[in-house]
Length: 110
Length: 112
Image (cartoon, rainbow over all chains, first blue to last red; front, top):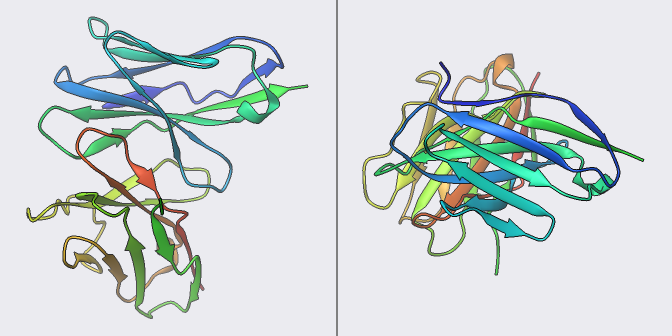
């Protein structure tokens, strides 16, 4: 089993729709979690950290489910500019090295 | 403040030549990472540095790859005797503590 798994997509959604991605991780010692977005031929950019209590930043909501070992990202009122690949990142307690998922591609359609 | 910078932004080299890629992390960030990404593929971890600790080189694909980090700041990734399969975007990132990583714009390496 891969350390971090994501559905590669693509997820094609109309503008204004709500879309959610999940990311599962295998190491129960994982402690820190992040979502990044990567635009075509650009570097990944940190979107948000994922806290145990869940957190929200505008239209974006991230949640952590430790029991089932997954994190999720919810995007409300999708915009064309949200089209990108979304990468989840997991960091194990006590280690600086992180593991990136291979990403979920989102295409928001007019 | 200034983000992570990398140079050069593009590098075209002939097979068999050596190349050096440079990364300037965010000031004060103790951790520095190198990744590479081939077109349409995910990130491939290469190496990371954490403070004065020995680097984690577990991701380096062969002994042609090496990296240094001088004075806890600037890092150089060196690829000796480049091969065509080394063609990729090489990304550097830095972080501090439990924060996420911040990436530089990458160096696009093309080996002809």
